[in-house]
Length: 331
Image (cartoon, rainbow, N blue to C red; front, side):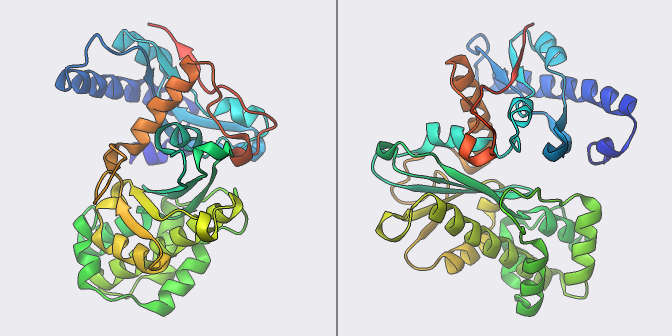
Protein backbone atom coordinates (compact mmCIF):
# COMPACT_ATOMS: atom_id res chain seq x y z
CA UNK A 1 0.00 0.00 0.00
CA UNK A 2 2.84 2.40 0.80
CA UNK A 3 4.46 1.68 -2.56
CA UNK A 4 1.19 2.20 -4.40
CA UNK A 5 0.71 5.58 -2.70
CA UNK A 6 4.34 6.74 -2.98
CA UNK A 7 3.76 8.70 -6.17
CA UNK A 8 0.93 10.71 -4.63
CA UNK A 9 2.62 11.71 -1.34
CA UNK A 10 5.28 14.23 -0.41
CA UNK A 11 8.81 14.20 -1.78
CA UNK A 12 10.11 13.55 1.74
CA UNK A 13 7.97 10.45 2.09
CA UNK A 14 9.15 9.18 -1.31
CA UNK A 15 12.82 9.64 -0.36
CA UNK A 16 12.33 7.96 3.02
CA UNK A 17 10.59 5.04 1.36
CA UNK A 18 13.32 4.87 -1.28
CA UNK A 19 16.03 4.29 1.33
CA UNK A 20 13.84 1.84 3.22
CA UNK A 21 13.15 -0.04 0.00
CA UNK A 22 16.90 -0.14 -0.75
CA UNK A 23 17.45 -1.93 2.55
CA UNK A 24 14.71 -4.42 1.72
CA UNK A 25 16.30 -5.14 -1.68
CA UNK A 26 19.76 -5.50 -0.13
CA UNK A 27 18.45 -8.07 2.33
CA UNK A 28 16.78 -10.00 -0.47
CA UNK A 29 19.92 -9.96 -2.64
CA UNK A 30 22.11 -11.14 0.25
CA UNK A 31 19.67 -14.00 0.93
CA UNK A 32 19.55 -14.97 -2.75
CA UNK A 33 23.33 -14.99 -3.17
CA UNK A 34 23.73 -17.10 -0.04
CA UNK A 35 21.03 -19.57 -1.05
CA UNK A 36 22.47 -19.99 -4.55
CA UNK A 37 26.09 -20.05 -3.30
CA UNK A 38 26.99 -17.09 -5.52
CA UNK A 39 28.74 -14.89 -2.97
CA UNK A 40 31.99 -13.55 -4.36
CA UNK A 41 30.97 -14.39 -7.95
CA UNK A 42 28.89 -11.31 -8.82
CA UNK A 43 30.39 -8.46 -10.87
CA UNK A 44 27.36 -6.19 -11.05
CA UNK A 45 23.88 -5.90 -9.55
CA UNK A 46 21.17 -4.34 -11.74
CA UNK A 47 18.29 -2.75 -9.86
CA UNK A 48 15.29 -1.25 -11.64
CA UNK A 49 13.56 -0.12 -8.45
CA UNK A 50 9.83 0.47 -8.02
CA UNK A 51 8.22 2.96 -10.40
CA UNK A 52 6.21 5.64 -8.59
CA UNK A 53 5.79 7.99 -11.56
CA UNK A 54 6.41 7.85 -15.29
CA UNK A 55 5.72 10.83 -17.57
CA UNK A 56 7.96 10.61 -20.66
CA UNK A 57 6.00 13.33 -22.46
CA UNK A 58 6.99 15.68 -19.63
CA UNK A 59 10.56 14.36 -19.69
CA UNK A 60 10.78 12.48 -16.40
CA UNK A 61 10.45 9.12 -14.69
CA UNK A 62 10.82 8.16 -11.02
CA UNK A 63 11.73 4.85 -9.41
CA UNK A 64 12.39 4.44 -5.71
CA UNK A 65 15.40 2.42 -4.59
CA UNK A 66 18.64 4.36 -4.25
CA UNK A 67 21.58 2.80 -6.12
CA UNK A 68 24.22 4.34 -3.87
CA UNK A 69 22.56 3.03 -0.71
CA UNK A 70 22.12 -0.40 -2.29
CA UNK A 71 25.76 -0.55 -3.44
CA UNK A 72 26.97 0.41 0.04
CA UNK A 73 24.82 -2.24 1.73
CA UNK A 74 25.81 -4.96 -0.73
CA UNK A 75 29.47 -4.07 -1.17
CA UNK A 76 28.92 -4.48 -4.92
CA UNK A 77 28.57 -2.13 -7.92
CA UNK A 78 24.95 -1.37 -8.75
CA UNK A 79 23.52 -0.25 -12.10
CA UNK A 80 20.31 1.70 -11.55
CA UNK A 81 18.27 4.62 -12.98
CA UNK A 82 17.70 2.60 -16.14
CA UNK A 83 15.06 4.70 -17.91
CA UNK A 84 16.29 8.30 -17.71
CA UNK A 85 18.76 8.29 -20.61
CA UNK A 86 16.18 7.05 -23.09
CA UNK A 87 13.64 9.63 -21.92
CA UNK A 88 16.26 12.39 -22.20
CA UNK A 89 16.67 11.38 -25.86
CA UNK A 90 12.95 11.74 -26.50
CA UNK A 91 12.03 8.09 -25.92
CA UNK A 92 9.33 6.56 -23.77
CA UNK A 93 11.84 4.91 -21.43
CA UNK A 94 9.90 1.72 -22.12
CA UNK A 95 9.74 -1.07 -22.88
CA UNK A 96 13.26 -1.89 -21.70
CA UNK A 97 13.33 -5.63 -22.24
CA UNK A 98 13.53 -5.97 -26.08
CA UNK A 99 17.32 -5.52 -26.24
CA UNK A 100 17.70 -8.08 -23.46
CA UNK A 101 15.17 -10.40 -25.10
CA UNK A 102 17.23 -10.23 -28.29
CA UNK A 103 20.35 -11.19 -26.37
CA UNK A 104 18.69 -14.03 -24.44
CA UNK A 105 16.09 -15.52 -26.77
CA UNK A 106 16.76 -14.76 -30.42
CA UNK A 107 17.39 -17.73 -32.69
CA UNK A 108 19.50 -17.76 -35.84
CA UNK A 109 16.83 -18.91 -38.28
CA UNK A 110 13.52 -18.74 -36.41
CA UNK A 111 11.37 -15.83 -35.31
CA UNK A 112 10.37 -15.71 -31.63
CA UNK A 113 7.38 -14.11 -29.90
CA UNK A 114 7.41 -13.51 -26.14
CA UNK A 115 4.58 -12.40 -23.88
CA UNK A 116 5.12 -11.35 -20.27
CA UNK A 117 1.97 -11.31 -18.15
CA UNK A 118 2.82 -9.39 -15.01
CA UNK A 119 0.69 -6.57 -13.66
CA UNK A 120 0.65 -5.18 -17.20
CA UNK A 121 1.24 -7.50 -20.17
CA UNK A 122 3.93 -6.75 -22.74
CA UNK A 123 5.06 -8.35 -25.98
CA UNK A 124 8.35 -8.72 -27.86
CA UNK A 125 8.64 -10.01 -31.43
CA UNK A 126 12.17 -11.09 -32.42
CA UNK A 127 13.10 -11.56 -36.09
CA UNK A 128 15.60 -14.33 -36.87
CA UNK A 129 19.07 -13.29 -35.73
CA UNK A 130 20.53 -13.72 -39.22
CA UNK A 131 18.29 -10.90 -40.48
CA UNK A 132 19.88 -8.40 -38.11
CA UNK A 133 16.54 -6.59 -37.82
CA UNK A 134 15.34 -4.76 -34.72
CA UNK A 135 12.76 -6.38 -32.45
CA UNK A 136 9.30 -4.92 -32.08
CA UNK A 137 7.55 -4.56 -28.74
CA UNK A 138 4.58 -2.95 -27.02
CA UNK A 139 2.49 -3.02 -23.88
CA UNK A 140 -0.45 -5.33 -24.44
CA UNK A 141 -3.06 -4.54 -21.80
CA UNK A 142 -3.89 -5.18 -18.17
CA UNK A 143 -2.02 -8.43 -17.53
CA UNK A 144 -2.86 -9.71 -14.04
CA UNK A 145 -3.66 -6.42 -12.32
CA UNK A 146 -7.42 -6.40 -12.94
CA UNK A 147 -7.72 -10.13 -12.29
CA UNK A 148 -5.83 -9.88 -9.00
CA UNK A 149 -7.91 -6.87 -7.95
CA UNK A 150 -11.10 -8.82 -8.65
CA UNK A 151 -9.82 -11.88 -6.75
CA UNK A 152 -9.22 -9.80 -3.64
CA UNK A 153 -12.59 -8.08 -3.97
CA UNK A 154 -14.82 -11.01 -4.92
CA UNK A 155 -13.07 -14.12 -3.61
CA UNK A 156 -10.91 -12.90 -0.74
CA UNK A 157 -7.71 -14.31 -2.25
CA UNK A 158 -4.70 -12.51 -3.66
CA UNK A 159 -4.81 -14.17 -7.09
CA UNK A 160 -6.45 -16.98 -9.06
CA UNK A 161 -3.96 -19.74 -8.32
CA UNK A 162 -3.47 -21.91 -11.38
CA UNK A 163 -6.51 -20.27 -13.00
CA UNK A 164 -8.81 -22.60 -11.08
CA UNK A 165 -11.48 -19.97 -10.44
CA UNK A 166 -11.53 -18.92 -14.08
CA UNK A 167 -11.72 -22.53 -15.23
CA UNK A 168 -14.75 -23.03 -12.98
CA UNK A 169 -16.50 -19.98 -14.41
CA UNK A 170 -17.90 -18.83 -17.73
CA UNK A 171 -16.89 -15.83 -19.84
CA UNK A 172 -19.50 -13.09 -20.12
CA UNK A 173 -18.72 -12.23 -23.74
CA UNK A 174 -20.65 -8.96 -23.85
CA UNK A 175 -18.77 -7.68 -20.81
CA UNK A 176 -15.48 -9.00 -22.20
CA UNK A 177 -15.96 -7.02 -25.42
CA UNK A 178 -16.80 -3.83 -23.53
CA UNK A 179 -13.90 -4.21 -21.12
CA UNK A 180 -11.43 -4.96 -23.92
CA UNK A 181 -12.58 -1.80 -25.71
CA UNK A 182 -12.02 0.20 -22.50
CA UNK A 183 -8.53 -1.26 -21.98
CA UNK A 184 -7.28 -1.27 -25.58
CA UNK A 185 -4.55 1.35 -26.17
CA UNK A 186 -5.66 4.00 -28.65
CA UNK A 187 -2.13 4.44 -30.01
CA UNK A 188 1.13 2.54 -30.08
CA UNK A 189 3.32 3.57 -27.16
CA UNK A 190 0.43 4.98 -25.13
CA UNK A 191 1.11 4.68 -21.42
CA UNK A 192 -1.30 2.20 -19.85
CA UNK A 193 -2.78 3.41 -16.56
CA UNK A 194 -3.87 0.59 -14.26
CA UNK A 195 -3.23 2.26 -10.94
CA UNK A 196 -5.78 1.47 -8.18
CA UNK A 197 -8.36 4.18 -9.07
CA UNK A 198 -8.37 3.07 -12.71
CA UNK A 199 -8.62 -0.61 -11.74
CA UNK A 200 -11.54 0.11 -9.42
CA UNK A 201 -13.37 2.05 -12.14
CA UNK A 202 -12.92 -0.68 -14.75
CA UNK A 203 -14.04 -3.40 -12.36
CA UNK A 204 -17.08 -1.39 -11.26
CA UNK A 205 -18.11 -0.62 -14.83
CA UNK A 206 -17.58 -4.02 -16.43
CA UNK A 207 -17.25 -6.86 -13.87
CA UNK A 208 -19.30 -6.04 -10.76
CA UNK A 209 -22.37 -8.26 -10.53
CA UNK A 210 -20.68 -11.40 -11.84
CA UNK A 211 -19.83 -14.35 -9.63
CA UNK A 212 -16.21 -14.60 -8.50
CA UNK A 213 -15.54 -17.42 -10.99
CA UNK A 214 -17.31 -15.77 -13.94
CA UNK A 215 -15.46 -12.52 -13.24
CA UNK A 216 -12.12 -14.36 -13.26
CA UNK A 217 -12.99 -16.10 -16.52
CA UNK A 218 -14.07 -12.85 -18.16
CA UNK A 219 -10.97 -10.96 -17.01
CA UNK A 220 -8.61 -13.76 -18.08
CA UNK A 221 -10.28 -13.79 -21.52
CA UNK A 222 -9.82 -10.02 -21.89
CA UNK A 223 -6.14 -10.26 -20.94
CA UNK A 224 -5.63 -13.07 -23.45
CA UNK A 225 -7.52 -11.26 -26.23
CA UNK A 226 -5.61 -7.99 -25.87
CA UNK A 227 -2.32 -9.87 -25.59
CA UNK A 228 -3.01 -11.87 -28.75
CA UNK A 229 -3.85 -8.68 -30.64
CA UNK A 230 -0.58 -7.12 -29.48
CA UNK A 231 1.45 -10.19 -30.48
CA UNK A 232 0.05 -10.08 -34.00
CA UNK A 233 0.57 -6.30 -34.27
CA UNK A 234 4.19 -6.55 -33.14
CA UNK A 235 4.86 -9.45 -35.49
CA UNK A 236 3.28 -7.51 -38.33
CA UNK A 237 5.50 -4.47 -37.76
CA UNK A 238 8.54 -6.78 -37.68
CA UNK A 239 7.51 -8.39 -40.99
CA UNK A 240 6.90 -11.71 -39.24
CA UNK A 241 3.79 -12.76 -41.13
CA UNK A 242 2.78 -15.81 -43.12
CA UNK A 243 5.53 -18.39 -43.29
CA UNK A 244 7.91 -15.97 -41.56
CA UNK A 245 5.75 -15.72 -38.42
CA UNK A 246 6.83 -17.41 -35.18
CA UNK A 247 5.41 -20.85 -34.51
CA UNK A 248 5.37 -20.43 -30.73
CA UNK A 249 4.26 -17.84 -28.23
CA UNK A 250 6.44 -18.10 -25.11
CA UNK A 251 4.63 -16.85 -22.00
CA UNK A 252 6.37 -15.58 -18.87
CA UNK A 253 5.35 -13.85 -15.66
CA UNK A 254 2.63 -14.84 -13.23
CA UNK A 255 0.16 -15.38 -16.05
CA UNK A 256 2.23 -18.34 -17.27
CA UNK A 257 0.93 -20.29 -14.24
CA UNK A 258 -2.71 -19.57 -15.05
CA UNK A 259 -4.14 -22.52 -17.00
CA UNK A 260 -7.22 -20.54 -18.04
CA UNK A 261 -5.06 -17.72 -19.40
CA UNK A 262 -2.95 -20.16 -21.43
CA UNK A 263 -6.08 -21.88 -22.77
CA UNK A 264 -7.64 -18.57 -23.81
CA UNK A 265 -4.37 -17.44 -25.39
CA UNK A 266 -4.25 -20.62 -27.45
CA UNK A 267 -7.81 -20.03 -28.62
CA UNK A 268 -7.13 -16.39 -29.48
CA UNK A 269 -3.88 -17.14 -31.33
CA UNK A 270 -5.32 -20.02 -33.38
CA UNK A 271 -4.14 -23.47 -34.39
CA UNK A 272 -1.03 -22.32 -36.23
CA UNK A 273 0.55 -21.19 -32.97
CA UNK A 274 1.71 -23.20 -29.98
CA UNK A 275 1.27 -21.29 -26.72
CA UNK A 276 3.43 -22.48 -23.82
CA UNK A 277 5.07 -21.23 -20.66
CA UNK A 278 8.67 -20.16 -21.06
CA UNK A 279 11.10 -23.00 -20.31
CA UNK A 280 8.39 -25.66 -20.38
CA UNK A 281 6.98 -28.06 -22.92
CA UNK A 282 8.35 -30.44 -25.50
CA UNK A 283 11.54 -29.20 -27.10
CA UNK A 284 11.85 -26.20 -24.78
CA UNK A 285 15.18 -24.49 -25.48
CA UNK A 286 14.74 -21.39 -23.38
CA UNK A 287 16.23 -22.49 -20.06
CA UNK A 288 14.74 -19.58 -18.07
CA UNK A 289 11.72 -20.22 -15.80
CA UNK A 290 8.70 -17.98 -16.47
CA UNK A 291 9.02 -16.17 -13.15
CA UNK A 292 12.68 -15.31 -13.83
CA UNK A 293 12.33 -13.81 -17.28
CA UNK A 294 12.27 -10.14 -16.24
CA UNK A 295 15.07 -10.63 -13.71
CA UNK A 296 17.14 -12.36 -16.41
CA UNK A 297 16.41 -9.48 -18.78
CA UNK A 298 17.67 -6.87 -16.31
CA UNK A 299 20.78 -8.96 -15.75
CA UNK A 300 21.21 -8.96 -19.54
CA UNK A 301 20.90 -5.16 -19.56
CA UNK A 302 23.79 -5.13 -17.09
CA UNK A 303 25.82 -7.34 -19.44
CA UNK A 304 25.11 -4.94 -22.31
CA UNK A 305 26.24 -1.98 -20.15
CA UNK A 306 29.46 -3.76 -19.12
CA UNK A 307 30.23 -4.37 -22.80
CA UNK A 308 29.48 -0.82 -23.92
CA UNK A 309 26.32 -1.74 -25.82
CA UNK A 310 23.01 0.14 -25.90
CA UNK A 311 20.28 -1.16 -23.64
CA UNK A 312 17.24 0.28 -25.42
CA UNK A 313 16.01 -0.31 -28.95
CA UNK A 314 15.51 3.03 -30.66
CA UNK A 315 12.80 1.72 -32.97
CA UNK A 316 10.81 0.53 -29.94
CA UNK A 317 11.15 3.43 -27.48
CA UNK A 318 11.13 6.25 -30.05
CA UNK A 319 14.37 7.85 -28.80
CA UNK A 320 16.48 9.94 -31.18
CA UNK A 321 19.32 7.44 -30.84
CA UNK A 322 20.24 4.34 -28.87
CA UNK A 323 22.03 4.79 -25.57
CA UNK A 324 23.63 2.83 -22.79
CA UNK A 325 21.18 2.66 -19.93
CA UNK A 326 21.77 3.20 -16.26
CA UNK A 327 23.86 5.01 -13.67
CA UNK A 328 26.67 3.17 -11.89
CA UNK A 329 26.93 3.33 -8.10
CA UNK A 330 30.12 1.97 -6.53
CA UNK A 331 30.29 0.56 -3.00
